[in-house]
Length: 406
Ligand code: UDP
Image (cartoon, rainbow, N blue to C red; front, side):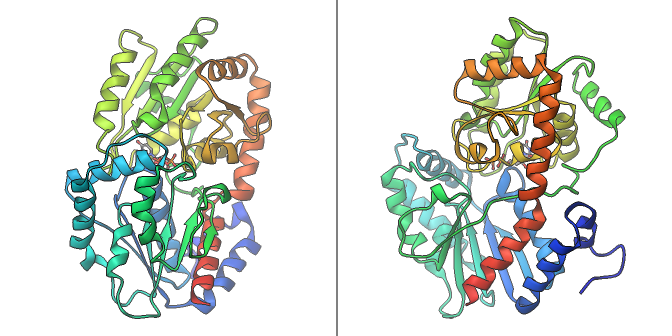
């Protein structure tokens, strides 16, 4: 199945993951050749789902799966509703009106034509396109799977109660972590996300490029740098990061970067960015960088240029940004929530924290102790290599297809 030199993307992972991992993928794919898989999500850029779909789809196609990825279309009001769902599913207190539920159903109905009648397996990602399952084609052999990318273990019961019947019309549900699984009438599969080490966002970068990027953003490459890359979302707690940075600055010199863009399915971004700018005002060492979509090289340079990476999320489905920073050998200080607590082994591959003060404490420790920072960073890189690279994700996707077709 190997293609000619130069055209085989999968082969390019061999120096990183070794030939056996790639052979396993090809063997798993062989019996699934020509199977048609359609994934549907709600945004083409911004956020972890888009990242995963953009990497997974071409690799599956390369091993013979007829994979496609489609994005639903919707008015901004729909995304206001689904953002409220998102917050409520993370345990937030949201007032969701009957009109909102009606808009959700209406928008899904308008997108029903997106579903490909000849797909063997349809994957709907997160709550936004889940309502499409009402329009699943009569073909009994068509399988539907709900891919949940968020932590719904503490979900608001009203919103979960509304979504659950749609979930149960699918043939299986996939969660990032075992603790996110719910009591459902359908099988549940655990599939941890992953990053692509060869992507523009993660591949090696010459030190000059890192330095130039930092300088373009007004950052001094010669001074310690604390970085958080995230959509401007309250659940990523950018204001808490600023508070922690201010505590650190009482003792040690450093600069802070809060970098992120928005996702078209996240209507709160502009407001949160405004709040962050207000809070940062007057401090020339806090850099709030609003990134365009696909600012992969900038994110790569920021993560590589960081002395310490912070991810102070209040909730986190998985936290691919943590994986990205760990892959780059960075010590990450992350809150002990969701997927962050899964990735960071406290004191081994980074530090887990719970509060602003705790964040400041660990950032200070790492800034003051470069030996510790590089030891944690090396272990973090190793952990990602073993567990969280896109080749593992392709393998899990193939195993999932085997299970659904059984
Ligand atoms: N990301 C990006 N641009 C941004 C902010 C984030 O490309 O402005 C990427 C980030 O590098 C990561 C993904 O989006 O790959 C975010 O995934 P994560 O799981 O950390 O959080 P989510 O946004 O899905 O809640």
